[in-house]
Amino acid sequence: MSKNTFHQKKTQSNKIALFAISMLCAVPVFAEDAPAKEEPSLWGKIVSFFHEEKAPEQQQLPPVPVNVMTVVAKDRVPVVKEIVGEVSALQEVQLHAKVGGFLKKKLVSDGAIVKKGDVLFEIDTRDYVAALASAKASLAQAEANELKARQDKDRYGPLVKEKAVSQMDYDHAVSVYNAAVASVEAAKASVDVATINLSDCSIKAPFNGKIGRTLVDEGTLVIAGNTALVTISDESVARFYFTISEREYLEVARHSEILSGDMKVRLVLADGSIYEKEGSIDFADRAIENGVLRFRGEFPNPQRLLIPGMYGRIQISLKVHKDAIVIPQKAVQELLGSYNVTVVDDSGKFERRRVKMGDRIGSSWVAEEGLSANEKIVVDGFQKIRPNSTLFITMVDEDGKPIQTPDATVPAAHK
Image (tube, rainbow, N blue to C red; front, side, top):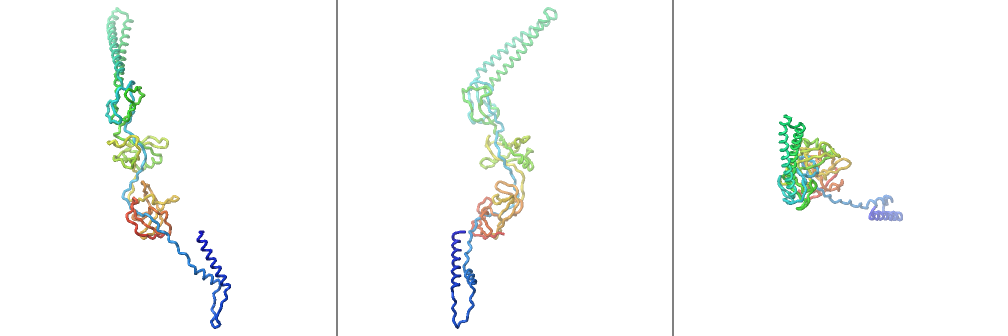
């Protein structure tokens, strides 16, 4: 009880008490010739006095400001699922030297666009030139030995038939020849290896692409197979990897062609814009691992706008609603699993109406039952509405922008 209310009641009680005492002490005086008038009882006078007190006027509540929009039925409303993922290059390789030595030349700048076969680095070739020369010399020696061994074998052949040499000497000549032939083949292989090593002193681009920051400078001692030189990636086609849970997979697989390879998808970039090129899903993993299934999409990337490491959201179309009622999610009141909206008619009366909600589309919601086109609903301010409230209505569009200036207070009655 407030302080003012307490004082008012106390004052009223004091008045009643004083009046009662005065009535008890009062002595009525009548004129002798005047006819006697019937006086009201003491209780009647008290009740009459009490009823003469005026009741305080009811306090008028201020109008409740609300934003109201007109519900519109849309011909075609696609239901799109967005899944976060990461961009990767079509090919990405970290280059290592196959041979060791001091880095003699760095022939490319950081971030350059290169073509397949372009020489990027050169390793000092002197050791490998000498190794090739040594291998060629060994080959020449082996070929000379092979020639002599063949001549000995050919000479001993007729003689063994005439018993001029023993069979053992002939067999030895044949064995020496076969060993000489094998030595020639080994020497040829050594020449091939030395040639390859010399060629590998020039590190070339394995495909068309873009290189990153070079990791070595001229004069660095490069260890074969261990020292990383630079990373090159082919970004002509961007791959987008994403994972979905088992539950999401069932939802997507039942409503789309994601597993057929013919499904077209769009990509939402980090700034909220949609990538101009349409892509497709080209890979789905064979099994679910750790509760998720891995997918991959491919997008043409002629302008190299998509680069490895970028994050985005791939849009997968699940289904299309026709003649759908779509309202803002903020207009829906959820309580214990039931959904309600505040509907306002043309006279300003409002009612809380239960509705059945369907798919969520961004910040909107598809109303499956309970609403019709051209009805008006409160999208902002419904939390402050009471049964005896009056509304200060501002009509807004789907984006929440006013479409007319509020110029009247509209009375509202709760149905």
